[in-house]
Length: 151
Image (cartoon, rainbow, N blue to C red; front, side):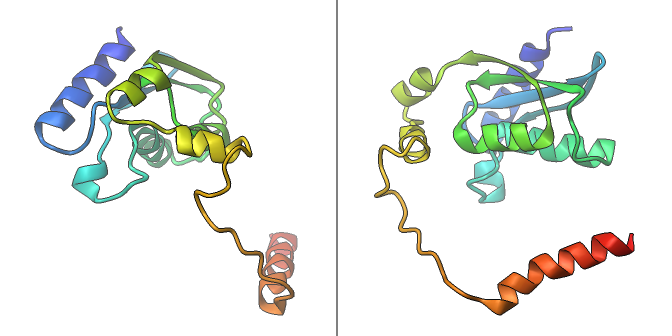
């Protein structure tokens, strides 16, 4: 089965419906296609609805787990830092991609501002302000541990 072609086909369908841009992803587990989706940023009015993110959401819901460590992702383009975060959090260990970050940038989809921020080369993207000494926030950790001790 051509899993990348499934991602391409989902992407074309999504673009034709104006759901999102030229990005798609397929998630496969043991030869079974769990999700084949397109980017849905425009349809969902959601900047996090990149194809890999949508595919992970669909797969987690379908498999009723957040652990996708036995899955493989086929993405039409190299995943951005946000998507890589979700891929790593979900446990996926293998990603196949076709177009590169440079291909995306050449076509108006640069993610270099994210990559530069995460690499510590540019902190002008967002103003991060650490709030000090909040007992209510500290309590969240205590409450979390208490709940886990009870289970």
